[in-house]
Image (cartoon, rainbow, N blue to C red):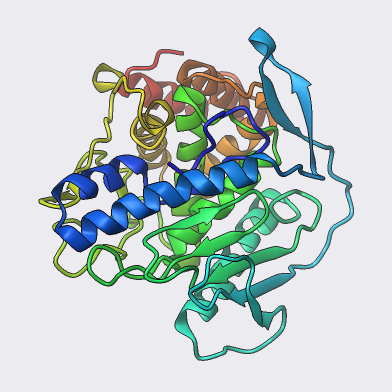
Length: 366
């Protein structure tokens, strides 16, 4: 419910908590939970309408198939900038960005949410800068702006096309939203946005979500120095409330197993194309069917071994930069990653062969 009604507008409002989860809470929760979920669904609709009217100085529109409009990034300049972070306190209000409380170079504030958002932004910046030579989210030194304490007991975090915003959670269903993989996931939506974009609908939207999950996981693994075999491959680990039956929002290792709870429902993600979910909700299941490409990346990382942000991450990043297809299907994306593997490692290389095997194991032949 965090993308706009017309998915072909310039930006989507990309939220970490998917609408299908809120809809289940609105049906199964107690009176206060139902009120919260319905309020969030309404707030998301209002935010979409407001953002849909805003223009972006960093994007231009081009004609797309069937007369639709999509976003593509302007070319970035080669100049390398230094990291520039600004963290704001939303003071439990809806207005963004709020009160500036920590800027680049400042020491810790003692507010855990502020300091986690600051450190998390640094981890994401380092991943893209040092591993993929990308100069911030837009490739041109973009300031990294985030707001914490957004709204009161707000159960979500989102990228709105220009900045991050994190709620505090209600302490019952969800705790903090400044968990490192959540921070990296949402910021990675910015990388997708400024790399040509993936239309936030159906399979291309699921690829958008999957890219954010992949690099959310990679940022966390790099932060802790974990190899592919050591990592949990969970997105949002530790943000679920104390009495929720689950471990995270999503599992790349075992899609569909992250949670199974009386209030939140059961994790609906598939791991194979045979289980692909056809739905009109969630922009065609963008948070659901992303489990398929997520699992392909996980399998590939296991085959290759070592640090997943190296060979697998390099291939996924290069594939996004070369994609040039905002309405890509899973098969299109698989073919693009295979091309990237060939470009980087050669035709017939073990990197190429294992990647083809990983895609076939999730039901996508390339």
